[in-house]
Image (tube, rainbow, N blue to C red; front, side):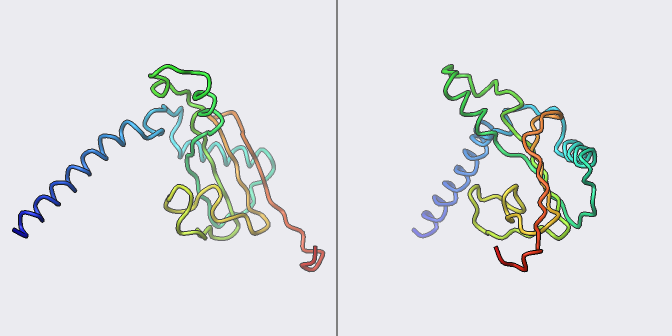
Length: 158
C-alpha cells in the first residue's frame, strides 16, 4: 500500500516538472524577446560607455544581467489588446544592467524580490565610493548611468 502512494507521488512530481518545463518556454520573457547581442557583448559595450564617460577606474568586481523593462511591458499591456501581443515584444522589453565596484560585490539579501541568485542591479545596495552602474536598452540607448562618490569630509556627520 505504501509503495503505491510513493509511486503516485513520484508520478505527480515528474508530471509537475514536465509541465513546468513546457510552461517555462511559454512564460519566460527572455525566451520571447530576441536580443541584438549577447549579455557578454553588452557588458563590453557598458565598459566602453564608462570609459568614454571618463570612468575606467580599477574595479575589484563587476556583475551584469538582464531584467524586464516595466515601462515597455506596461505600454504593451495598455495599448495592445491582441492575444498574440506577448509573442511580438520589442527588444526594448528587456534591459541590460551592469555594476562595477572597487570591492567585491556580495549579495546582502538572501530572499529578494525575484528570488534570483547572485548579485542583482539593486543587491547589494550601493554603499562605497567608486561604485558604478549602467542600464542599457540595446547597444545604444542608455537608460541610466551612475557613478557614486561619497564625501567623508563631514566626519560621518550629516
